[in-house]
Length: 374
Image (cartoon, rainbow, N blue to C red; front, side, top):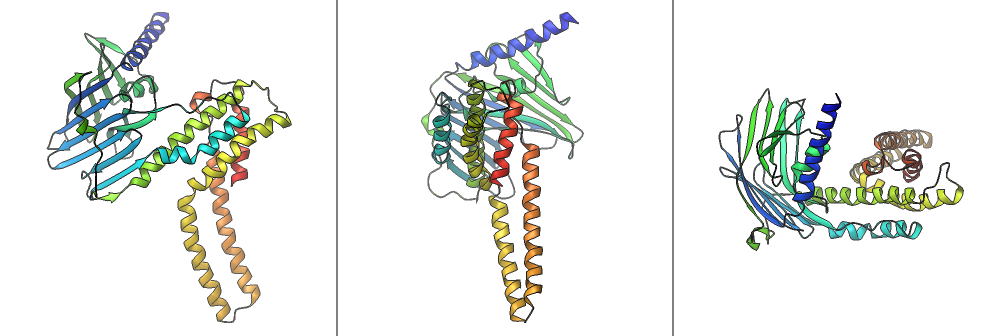
């Protein structure tokens, strides 16, 4: 048993070493081929990366083409893979400018809090088994993230899944989710093979070519210019970037409080400092999260107003009108209460904060700010 434990630790170290060494990659161009028992055409996946802030991922299958970019903080996509073409573009600077007052609130109360890390581009790769549809799924795309140890997203996903390596010549092989098999190079951490099995079929991704640290044509990172056909999903891109900014800020809030090492129960002064950073955060975050609900509620409220006007025009009594108003207000308040409880139930300490002292107690203080915002 001790031997097995030591072996697992050693293999975890191998993965951690690959993550560290792959962070030194300055640029690369990689081509993969994807085959699937569910698709007739093969798919070609081309990835170009230039540190620290340029990445392009392009998928080609027959007449279908999908390209995502993350260049100098701007995310963009153009795709005709689905039934309807889509396109979108969003500059992350807009989000970070908007939350600058929240950053200021943090550093005003906790001057030693960490500054927002620089953002960079990376290749994101994730995979999961869809139990409902009984299908193996994966995605490779251009990512915006805080500059991390590696631009190779598959290594981070393997680490997050706590995958254990098995040595096979020049490769490290991993299995995750009882469905996926991954092989990466021992030398540089690059993905060599990826496969997923499901009752509906199998998919296989294989590396065809790789060029490391060689010049890349700048045109590959040129964002689309002029009008692009397709449904605009820029709002979806902005929401994703907003989540990145919020998660980063929230993690640094926890770290800043922990650095002062207060022992709960917090005194009045400490509670005030904590509130001074969490309250403005949720006064902004909650309305943003509920924006769609607010829009729908405004339409419902307009309908109720027309109904009330009709009742008054038709001679209904003040008591009857009041009953309708109370009933409709009750519906809205019940929805808000349910959303608040759902928000609080899902709220958990940031992953990076779980090892910090008193994270559980700080979470309770955070939940108070959420309730105040609602």
